[in-house]
Image 1: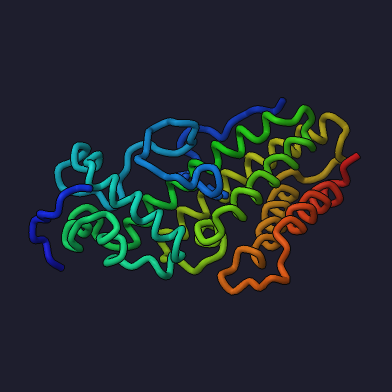
Image 2 (image 1 turned 60 degrees about the vertical axis):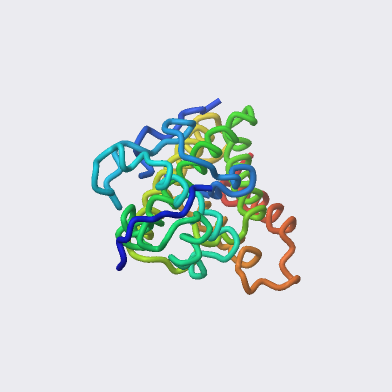
Amino acid sequence: MSTTPDTTAAAPDTTAPSAGASGAAPGATGTGGAGAGGARTSGAGATGGGARTSGAAPGGAAANASPTRERLLLAAREVVEAHGYGGASVAAIAARAGVANGTLYRHFPSKADLFVEVIRDVCDREIAAATKAALTADDAVGKIDAVLVNFARRALANPLLAWALIAEPVDPAVERVRLEYRRTYTGHIARLVRAAIRQGQAPPQDAAIAAAALVGAGNEVLAGPLSPLAGEEHDPFAAIETLRTLCRRALGAA
């Protein structure tokens, strides 16, 4: 692949998931309110981070923080929002960032390396959004409801990005980041389920399994409306209400 230098001009359970746990689900995933993207700012309500190792460009930290690299990450996110992961070609991303293909490959060895960074950022935003959503309710079951519904609304506001986050076929390296996010997000729900049990709002149960079931069910409820092939028979508002009812019934909430 070409490495010719680019000459194009640069155009309450309020416990948060522990730092670094997500690697960083549901903007949704940076979906909805976080869909504006922009350059990554470390520690802005996100759980993940730490040292970035994938796709590291020669030159160490200075290269990783370069304006061109950040512009490529934003361009990649915007292309996914418009065309999905499968439609996000290297050429389309480079063109949107205003650089040559070879410039992209100097910062990211492959499309998978680029999207590991993009999906990690989206997932970080989703964990931050989930933590914030939990603060809007007073009791544990209300917090679970708020977190799940918040994710659903964000996902439906940015469907192709959310589809890439939860269901679209992706490269194995990107899938590993999605699984890290899912574990962190599910762990957040599990803590709230334990709080609901302590508060007598839900009967004794395995909180980890209950949380995994709620997250999995939520993804399935959203899969139809989010799919690029979805027809008008999928009512997004009905999906949210279904998710809310399912949550309380599955928990046996009082």
